[in-house]
Image (tube, rainbow, N blue to C red):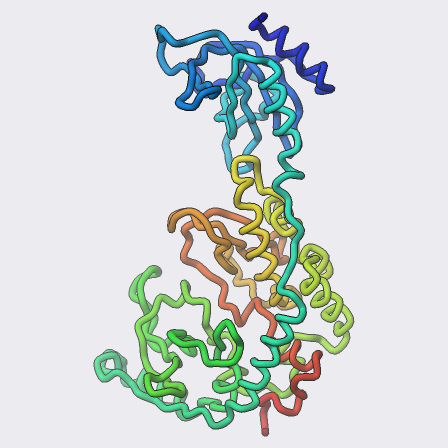
Length: 425
């Protein structure tokens, strides 16, 4: 049996692939220069590259692995196939040009050229193999949850809301801060707090261990520090309780400081609450329909929100990359669920000038230093959604980017606009 690059090229061509001979990528700039058979793979810039290499038997019968050091008495001459892709976050030159130095995203070794061809053929199907169909919450399950939410809101008018201020935190306020706090507490809009306080996953009960930040009373001493906030949360004996707490505001999802209509300054109509211009009701309805049917990119396009390559792929159910292909199902499922309740027509108002992109949600996977998620920022002054693996603590409060589910409850006939707490009611 011939072990040469020519034998590998012939085997690839017999299978219908079209290899091109070029210098193979090297892991280190000091690595020896070797020829390789390049086969274009699906992806922005992805290739399988087959080379002749020293290999040795692996731990399992029939497995082979690269030789780490020579001489090795078990080493034989065989073939190595490696999957290379241009990573958008990598500071490298294109694989096709110059003297490519790259790290393989996948590797396969064998003494048989036919086995290498089978591996390359399998890699050629990687996008189709790992793609999923974006699917949101089943309609029946969603309707049942929204029915429970509607009943909880309508029946919540008698939920007790008391105030208990921590004496120690209260003593840290200046006279002016204490006076402003008293005025804020006196003006609390209790019907709104009861109505919009987050519910649990079932939709039927107040979310336990959830703290909603209403207003920052004392700013933090440092950008990463904790400030003193007026908050509202569930009380031990039931009901809700407003009080003071030390919190890192920029890392909190439940913040209403930019949504006073919920707790302090009631809205005049539902359009103000939902961010729906009367002249754009058709656009909003079309965007919501697209979100609920798993067509998030269509909704974003309708609302003038751009995306980066990775976000577009995740929302379409495509693998972000070959090396991260196993996360596709989890990321697409979580991203689709996130977008189901989004309100992209409001995102322009949610942008903060000069602020770094803020996390909408974490999609799962990896450690605290590189949590994959979707981030809302701006590009050219318009909303721009990106996918990143980041440990940034900066989050976008849900009240700023999520849809007020009263919109859905009214659309489904589960409540009427007259039941929503507004000014004068």
